[in-house]
Image 1 (cartoon, rainbow, N blue to C red):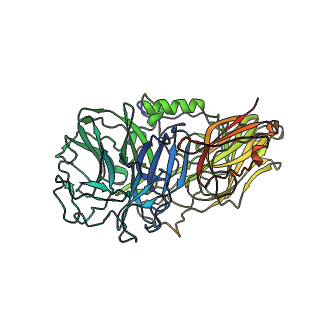
Image 2: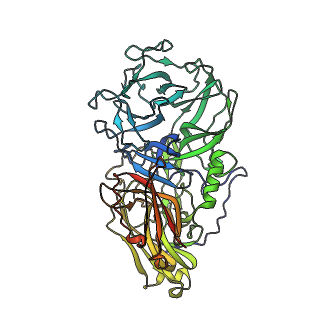
Image 3: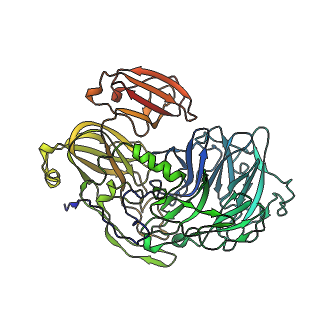
Length: 594
């Protein structure tokens, strides 16, 4: 077996204006895994940011497995599957949009399906979601059926726009974009409001076709800055996708096309096909959240990114796409992220020397007639320890091994592994060696003295990152990836525009942390029914020196309300407390007495 050593010095070449696509700690993509058509939303009640999106990465079941990501700081993210109405179709579901109603206080979620555009409501951005129309079946449930506005392509990419106390949606594709006003009954059910006299088009449903959107294809998103109404939208396709805009003095137009492309393909900086966006204002800063294509090009493996935009008068700055994203520059989210990184636990594996059993090649691809050449050892070992969601390590054969040299013996609390398909199940093992058992990483590779510490060979957990307690002193860790429930060429995937797709098991990030002594709202915990407290992500691990110490545990719901507080002297690894709370996600704060 040929092992590949990466003594990571992290020197990359790029244009003078940007970091390279594989620079460590790039803030774009903001999420691991493959998602598209993002709707970003800030909830003042839970004080968290949410991203709803299309789930990519498997073609026959394309746009299935809907999920939501959420964070308070753009560093620590959690995801969970969406609990959508049972009468809705399960696939395909794409291009969601979320908002909070300005007067009734409920949250509303739009999703598109081939049969129509569906709307649901909930008391929380995390759901569970109930159908928000009077329909009781898949055929009667949509807010509007595809084709019931103007015909072909009217069911594409509906997005909310809230203007004061009025809720609209923009929608449509292939050259036509419309706006409709929504009405909400006292019971919270939604419908299209046919009483607005400005909506001069349509029969069954009243809407207004928006004039002046030059080069409009799909993905409309309306927002207002001062007295100016903007519509951003996407044009072209695949690796050449881009975002343009138009402006008006009224939400129904007429609009005037803006100059330049807000987002565009950037070959020099490894950015392909940025498009389909939502807009977020935080303080005085404006942000565009969008997807781009996998680099190198692989269709239907899109990734979520975010950049600040400059909005002034009736103009929006052009060419804002970068790899650094909100990890560089000044602004509200840039400050938030920088502060969170400073306060974060140290990842002991970041930038360390790694040794892999193999590295998978990029096999090349084709998109819109353009060919992308194959690249050997493209999915490199060093990418597993680079804090970059746009890179992965993938062995060319299974089982595949990655050894991390921490440089010296370290007291270890836990490891966290984020896999390429973050909603799928992976099976793996983790072992360790001390510095006295191997003087170098190559000696560690040939050692037969590895000690087992994590065995997930029968793992069933689907959500990444997967956190595992360590509680050992070690210099080397070996991650062995065994198998995964991922799309394969013979099963779920119909190859359309790509050749580089399946037969890889990839690791986005392998992180290692020391013992935790105090965690401040580190992570959400799930309490299944009346059962015990269990983690779904990061969790605190207290080594022997904390056993018997008094630990104060505070549990909050996502509205920030304290729902439980108590103390224990149990070791955290064995901690199981029946809190008597309903099943759901909670935030846990743990403090250890001196």
